[in-house]
Amino acid sequence: MTEHSWLSLVRSQRAIAVIRAPNFDLGIQMARAIAASGMKLIEITWNSEQAAKLVYQLRAELPDCSIGAGTLLTSDQVKEAIGVGSQFLFTPHTNPTIIQAAVGQKVPIVPGALSPTEIVAAWQAGASAVKVFPIQSVGGAAYIRHLQAPLGQIPFIPTGGVTVENAKEFIEAGAIAVGLSGQLFPKGAIVNGDWAMITQRAKELMGRMKDETASNYRLTD
Image (cartoon, rainbow, N blue to C red):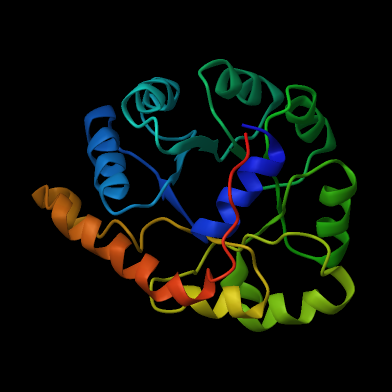
């Protein structure tokens, strides 16, 4: 999938499910529950148990989804993530060397940044979009709105404090999508194996975002 196609999918879906799996089997079940909701963007954090195996397995099991890797801290981790088939990459920080490693392999990469200086540095280094993180610590959706005037050409994906209830606010403020982790995966649901509840949470999220996707983007490759 090209960067253009991936960004088109992101703009149409508006949300990315971030899975931090305590073990391999739970990671598979969490991803299945999300896919059952119609969400197509699934990120496996690299501090999940057997993250590489999870990405590899999910690529085979969920061909209609885009499976990526997140919480990548080093170039070696980026190479490993690409090697097992990650279709997009997220990092919590901005490192030009890591960004270029992904760009060289033509894999979309979304580095983390918070200040305008960090955001521009990430963009100029070749980022596909910028993960504005942790968004809630700097004012939430209002911060995205303030960034739009000077930096509106940069695609923002805020994470860190996004909830099912407030996700739409970030899209209205100008973000192309949001990332959610714990909000989609209540601990009680995971402990009890209540995968239907997780699917329902994801459906609720997508329903809240629906009227913000009137201008859908069609994949061309």
